Length: 94
Image (cartoon, rainbow, N blue to C red):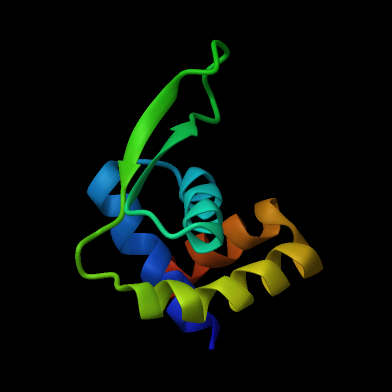
């Protein structure tokens, strides 16, 4: 079931050239109020620079609704940093 979460996160990351942690925050925001684009604050910048991130066209509203519960459970259980490590490891293995 976590595979869906990973498969939604990665195309968005590739489309926008962002870090996995930034995209996790973006998908969490999109799941709360469904919109196709949003501004995110970049992680490594000191001046709170914001970047426009766009949801990939392949990802539908039903995909986001499926991922919403998985993402909330994963963030509650392990936190954002651990989820980034899990996604990175899964990508290297496949």
